[in-house]
Amino acid sequence: MEMSFAQALNDAKQIIVQQASRIKADAEKSRVHQEMLTSQATTIGEQEKRIANQSAEIERQAVQIGELTSRLGDSITANGQSEAVVNRQGERIQSLQATVAEMEARLGEQSEQIHDLQRQNELILEKLPTQEDIEALASLSALLTKKISPAGSISRVEPQLRLADAA
Image (cartoon, rainbow, N blue to C red; front, side):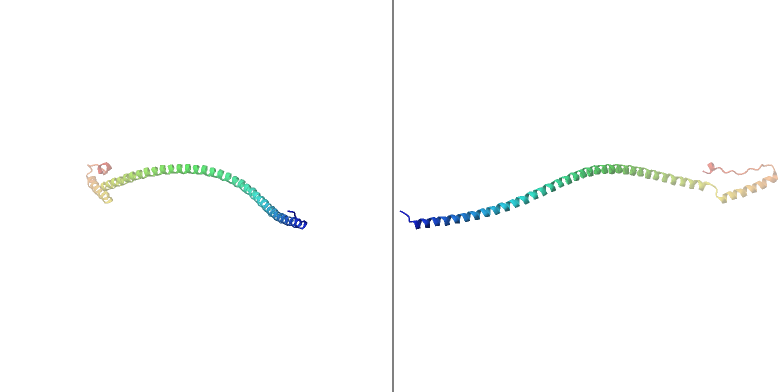
């Protein structure tokens, strides 16, 4: 099977056209791969920037968390101190309430004593002669003194009131 020169040329031409098509296809694939690599490189660059930004944000938040942790510790300490103050004040209030209760009891006792003393005073005042009684005794005494004085034998005795007898 011998090939003629024209046929060999046609075969060579077909091989060249096929290879040119393959080269074009390969070039297109290479261009697509190049574009894809460029796109991925851009994406990788953007991702690296994001990672850097996120790292900075994470560091900022870590510092903020540290500050908040410190403030939380301070708040917990202050809360404990406040509770201690409140407890002391509660104990003081209870002590004062107990003192108030004692004073109220004493006040009640003293009020009863005052009432008893007032009743005793009223009883004593009832036993004491009234102003009318004193005036009547004075006039009676004056009468007795007048009648006894002219006789001269009886000495003058002034009436004396004793509170002990009246009570």
